[in-house]
Image (cartoon, rainbow, N blue to C red):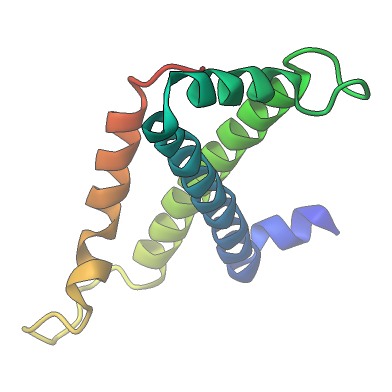
Length: 129
């Protein structure tokens, strides 16, 4: 069952949607955490400590943080692989270009791959903590 979902176009688009949602939620949570710096050093340090101890005593020290990191990496890889495979599938389905001279897609649609590549390359230099 899982293999047939992954092989379908709808399945790949679903993987892209879910992984994109995971990345968006991480981005919002990361932004909220970074905004704590405006509340002072003690508040920011307390947030950093909370990140390492969230889930205790059920999860050990930093385990939840590592779980979040793994889920995020899986989401990024799944999103990129799905995007690549869908674009290859699209090219294979119609090897010739459309007749329309003027692009019918919006500016956001045409630049989405470059925005994703840019944000991926800029975030690859950030630290894990």
